Length: 110
Image (cartoon, rainbow, N blue to C red):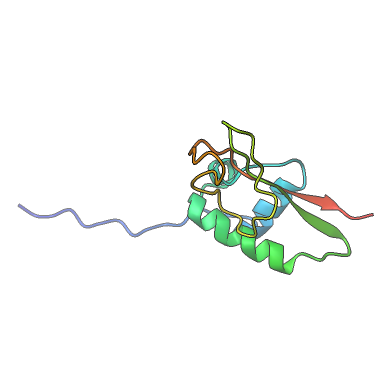
């Protein structure tokens, strides 16, 4: 039996780069990494990598990268001092694993 030749991988056609798409999405309102992943069509892990790059390269005179921190859904603990963008695994207070996703947005300065 002859094997059917595989069709070559054809990437999704994009007008902008993924980072520009994410940044323009975040200028309208706040999104979680999961929501960004669904809108842009890339994995959640890849979204976090792009968000970290956007955070490092954003022009701080013109825009602010705003992170609304994750919070425990059981006791209400808010992860304010967390430097990582990813969602934490457990609450340090009650050890509960139901944590809300952090939200990301880009606001204009001034």
